[in-house]
View 1 (cartoon, rainbow, N blue to C red):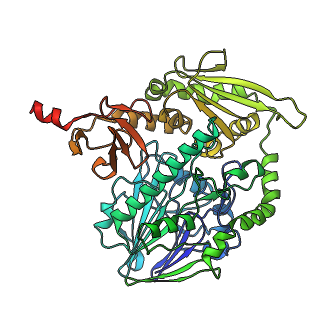
View 2: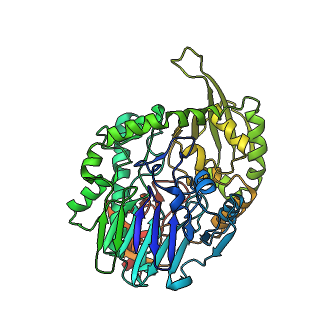
View 3: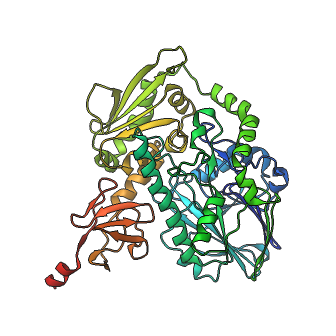
Amino acid sequence: MRVTGTGHASMFIETGAGSILCDPWVNPAYFASWFPFPDNSGLDWDRLGQADYLYVSHLHRDHFDAKNLRERISKKTTVLLPAYPTTELRDELAELGFRNFIETTSDEVMELDGGLKVMIQALTSPTDGPIGDSSLWVEYDGVRLLNQNDARPTDLSVFRDLGHVHAHMLQFSGAIWYPMVYELPQAAKTAFGKQKRARQFDRTVRYIDDLKASWVFPIAGPPCFLDDELWQFNDIFGDEGNIFPDQQVFVDHLRELGYENAVIPLPGTEVELTADGCDVHQPVPDVREFFANKEQHLREYRERQRVVIEAEKASWSHPEIDVLAGMKERIEPILVEAEQMAKGIGGPVRFDLVTGKDGDGEAEQVESIVVDFVDRQVRPYAGEKVRYRFRTERRLVEHLLYIGEVDWVNSLFLSCRFSAARIGQYNEFVYAFFKCLSEERINYAEGWFAEQKPDAEDVVLGDWVVQRRCPHLKADLTRFGKIEDGVLTCQMHGWKFDLASGRCITSVGHEIRSSRREASADKS
């Protein structure tokens, strides 16, 4: 089996029974904020696009690159579809011209022509990607590969039970906006960033330990930020709170822990994978030196992409759009359906939309609009106290309304072109709602939240008896739970629970069942 790195979470898998192209991302994503790192635009995408099979793990735009898929990927290829609850991925691929689809069943091995075997595990909670994320397992001639990309399964045993895995590709770096965009003192932002960076590494190492593959390939991050306005998010300033560490940083971390089986896949890296080892051919003379010169690479990359960024920015303004009226038309029908989410949010969410910028000789004008989850309406802000607030450029929301975007998380929020403030805990319902601005999505998400039942099984963790599954996304706490000073942390996503009260410290609406072991024993 030959695996060629093609950037970020993308890879080209070649076997004697056919080839699979995965997640071919090249063009900027999320309002031209994210770019693949390192630059992969110089690869022969016309050749790569002739793959026998195409696998797009999910609809996040750093995996689903519509422009590249439309222009460079052959429409004769056969698409391997994850078993998602909505048809959006298939529909969007069909709109781009793809006609050949294989519908897979989650966690079931499928044998393709020539003895090539694949299995796709689909994750389907409303908080997994844009209503879904997935992993791809491949086997040919006794060699097995797991492309986990940035999916977060609660259990890798379904892959492990199929036989020893020889190559494990998985995410290690940040892929979100927290805490960088939050309106916090810099010291607090750095502290939260350090915690998130550590959790990212811990989670990845736990996955590595679970699967015990022969070789580990850190992928699916980090992106890089080439717009001058976002340049500070690149991890080139010695900021220990930056959540976007690069591949070399993570591999060095693994080596400090005693792991010597990591391979960094750059765009163009070729790996000949066998059951006994892997032969690696890198496109640069010295990988460590490449990362030592990361800033120079980014500066040259930025200059090549300036015209692309400016062209994107020129397309965002739509002054003919009445934003208040447009938000009412888009959001109010969804609010009517959002019983579970409205209850979980329980108040107004405010958007401060800015026209003009300070410092440019142009007065800043702000229009504040509220999405009211109590009265189920969109209206002008009336001066009331709000727990959740976002501040962004008006033209970005104009563009979302202009294109009819149903997923503001997979566009505005991932762009990091906003700031956020909140009073109290993180509320997952806020972000779940703004990725569900369509009837299909909101009905699925509402049904999912309504069907969640308390976990019936209890387990002993140290001095505590707790429910086995995390109230957030059902991770097995015997594997992902860590207790310190009466606080349980689920290392799957970093959620924390005060065990004495059962209260979730991280978010609202997710209490855990817990009691001290001694108290539990006395009752029996």
